[in-house]
Length: 336
Image 1 (cartoon, rainbow, N blue to C red):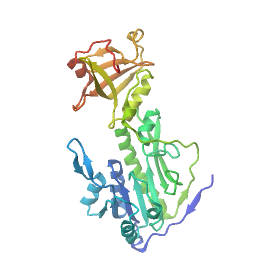
Image 2 (cartoon, rainbow, N blue to C red):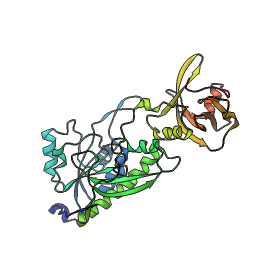
Image 3 (spheres, one colour):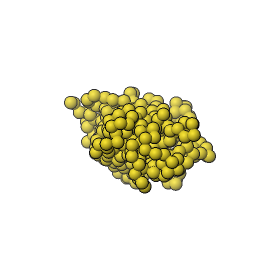
Image 4 (cartoon, helix red, strand yellow):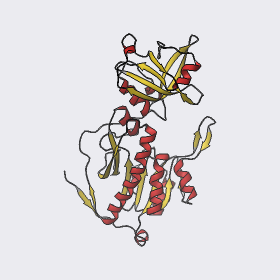
C-alpha cells in the first residue's frame, strides 16, 4: 500500500499564531465536541450549518446544536438552503480558509465548495472506513452486532466517504451501547482525532492512505425498519432495539379490547439460560413476568427480557408497569 505524504503551508494569518484557519460545517449534537475542540485549538472563521427547522411535539422552530455553540462564541453562522448559491460560495471564499472541516453536516457538498480552502477539505466519519460508508454508520454497526467501530478523518474527494485516510481511531462497543451512547463516545473520540489530524497537517507529516478492504454501506434508517420480527434470534432483536434508540425506535404491536396498538421497546437484555417456558410457546409469546423488572418474550432462538417500553404519546416506562396496567398474563402474544 503506497502512502502519499503532503506538505502544508498555512496562510500567513494563521501561521503567526501557530493555528490553521477553519470553516466548520456540521449540524447535530454529534458535531459539537469537534467544533468546541477546534475553537479551543485553531482559528474557526465561520460555521456553516443546516437551516433552523420545526422540532418536537410543538413543532417549534429550533436551531441546530452547532449554531447554538457558534452563536455563543460570536462566530459567524451561515445556513444556506442552496450550497451551490454563488453568493454563499463567494462569502466562504472571502474568508480564505486553510481548511474546511466537515462533521455530520447532513447534505452532499459541491466540488466548488470543497475546493475553496488553501489546502483541502477534511471530514470526520463515524466508522472505520471503508466499512459503513453512508449516512447511518452508528445504528448499522449495532444492528450487525459489531464489537468495535471507530472514527476516520479523511481527505474529502469527489466520491462520498471514499477519500484518502489521514487518521483512524478504534472504539469498543459495549453490549448495552445504544446509538445514543455509542454516538457520544464516537463524537468525543472523533473530536480528538480531528485535532491530531490537523496537527499532522501543520507539521507536514500527513501520509494519505487509500481506503483498502471490503467496503460496506450504511443507508439511512427508516421508521418501518423498527418493526420487531419475533421469529429471529434474540440477539438480533436486542441489536435492533439498541440501534434504533433514541430514534426512531424498535416497536411491536399488541391487542387490547380487540384493537391493535403499537408499543415501542427501548431496553432489552438477551437471556443466556434456556427457559422451560420457551418450548411450547410460539415466538412473540410472553413466557415469564418478573415483578419490578419486565417480561420475557420467546423469539426464534432464545428469549429476551424487555425492560423499558413506551406507548404512543406517553413517556417511557418500566416494562413491568405496562404489564400491570394492561393486566397482561403469561402466554400473551405480541406482534399479532
